[in-house]
Length: 174
Image 1: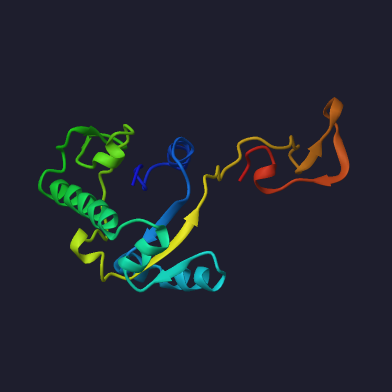
Image 2 (image 1 turned 60 degrees about the vertical axis):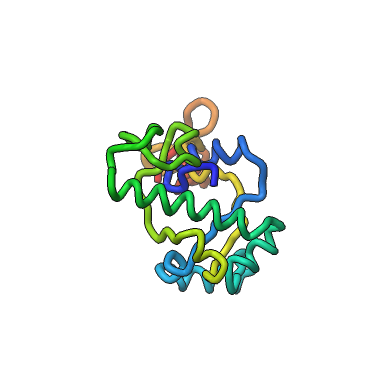
């Protein structure tokens, strides 16, 4: 972990650019059960993998199981500390306040909200769904100039006959 996974897209993407890929979306049993249709869909498409347990995931990642156990334990402990003291912690949090999460706290946008955490001891036997993800900017605030009828405006401020734009390509209109 190196970022507040629940942060804004531009923040998460920016932190990804500062780090070394591959980046993984790792869903434990509880998290994947909430979106199982999606997990099965993406496994079927070949863009997500299912791992029977954390040991198999660690092998696939080429890291010792202890790395995954320690990372999950740190995340779990930050969640527990937040339950006990939601306004505490040594790191600045996003969107405001303080955070107990060191991994995201070092970025200045510490995590404040937790769901589906598991203790490190559970990683060895916990099933996981995992996808490799890449940095992406998922929005467009530029695009083509259009008139009130969605016709694309060309040079001289005149509509180009027969050319229309819709969606995000229409100059940020969505």
